[in-house]
Length: 165
Length: 165
DNA sequence: AACATATCATAAGCGCGCATACTATTTAGC
DNA sequence: GCTAAATAGTATGCGCGCTTATGATATGTT
Image (tube, rainbow over all chains, first blue to last red):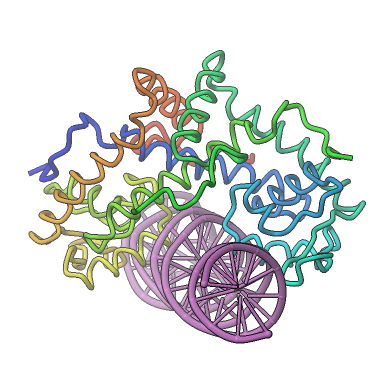
């Protein structure tokens, strides 16, 4: 016996996808631990930081934030309510669209976002330190895949209606 | 305004960790769609394939499988019961350890694992095709990170008791 | 103006990934 | 041999990532 699985890999454990999945899980554990002292989950941090970074004069809806942060609108909705309960963000009625809500980060939210961001950047640096000088190549590969998958985080996407027809 | 977030990245959307997270989510969507026709989730496939590949003469426990597949033992337990209900794997009592269960893949499980594996390998190839000849470098980076994080999937780990002291 | 279509936000629900805790057993130390 | 510690497996519960569905509002068409 010992191998009733036909695979094109010498060692199935070395498949790119499988390792990508495992590495991301491992990275998420690091980030989770890093953010725990701040009382933030990873997604909470991502949305809080993204909103803090894009907080401009034009009103930002949940949809806008979800698109910018490349997060699921459904999840974005519930995470934002969690952030609201922590008084880190506020959700006001939209001036012209009564369906929508405009988002604003509170001063406490801005402060926490910056403190947490510093910790995450440090954790990130430590995690990918093992790559040495190949780190930039690795990041470039991720950017390539992001572009190919249309999840760049800004522009490059939308246009809708370009599929399944 | 426009940027109350202090970041060391020119564009926070290009941070390695963030892109890693997004790319993996996107890859998972692909795999999910690929496996859907087979009635398998990603984790179900991973465990079924791993068990099929390691199915040897020495009895394999759930713990063994979880360690080999680098999956959470808790999740492994419940996913295996799902696979058992589908008659893809069998869980027998262990010959010498009455706490443990020995795992066996059914013929249907082996067949499905191979069909699904072929589809996943093809989906993987398509997904990472955008990397071109840099694909191997990317995979090597993942291997480096796996080793650094001690999640290689076999050996290299364990030794326990090496932390927090 | 009336109607069809699209969009914003959310409810409900499923499976993953993980933390905590518990039972039943095995192993180690004495 | 007897107790203490470790281990295999599982229940419970939380938050993510996503699918499907629904109500309210906006927009586009005629």
